[in-house]
Image 1 (cartoon, rainbow, N blue to C red):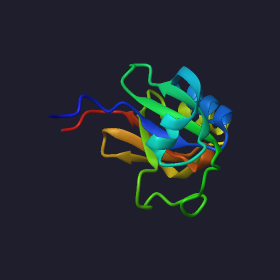
Image 2: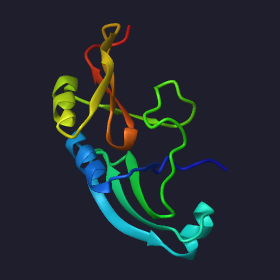
Image 3: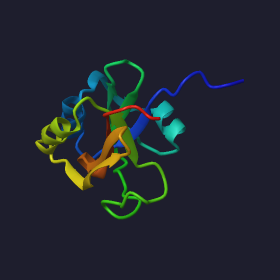
Length: 149
């Protein structure tokens, strides 16, 4: 038995509307929204009294998805420092390939994104950077500028 595909990455946010706006500006498409609550959600998450709102975002090619979740109950908790550094253990970064990294940074800054470090060039192949977006999410961007040898 093997997996069929990676379906989505779930990210808990404190402001669902701001997160949807941020990822829409990045170029993702809102696939749908739903209110999640009840016994199935409680059992799957191992929590009691789950009430949440989700927004499913998809990349333009249809292969990548983010499930953005705002918990109304129980309240979301912070696992560590509010804005953990990039070397923190665990899942905390999502990377996207973009056509124009400079334009993307300008557009995302209008949604509160902050550049971590600077735009760096990896050989003559990629320009790369990390931004901190809504709810402290680190979003990495990669612009292909050449070919690997």
